[in-house]
Length: 129
Image 1 (tube, one colour):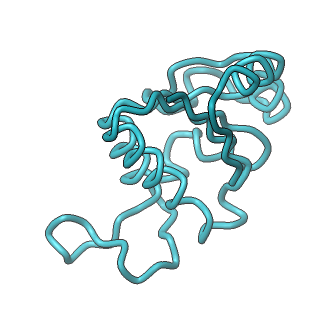
Image 2 (spheres, rainbow, N blue to C red):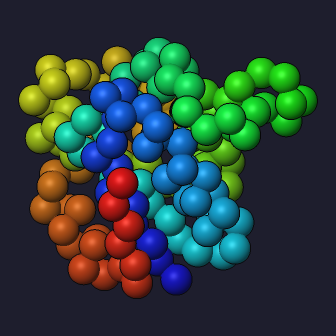
C-alpha cells in the first residue's frame, strides 16, 4: 500500500505536528510505502533547528526513557528510521527563500507541486495534516 501525507501544519500549529510522523512511522512499520510531502507552513519544519524546538502539546509524548519530552524532530527521525520518505514542495521552499543547505538532512528531495499531484493520484491513501 502506498500512502502520501500532505503536511501543511507547522510551527504555527505545534499541537498538529507530531501525529503525522507517528502515524507515518506506524504505517511504514506495517509494510506501507509512506511519503510525507511538506507544503505551506509545514515546509518550515524542514528548516534546521525549527522542529527541534517544537514540543507537541500532548502529555504522553515522552522520550523512551520517559523523562525528556519528545520534540517534533524526534517524531520525524522516528518516521525516517521506519523508512518514510520526506519531500518538499519546491515552490514552498523558494517562497520562503530557503536553500538546500538550510534544510534538514532527512529531506529526500525538493520537487515541484506537480510531482505531489502525480504521486497523490497514484497513492492508495492521501492524508492531510
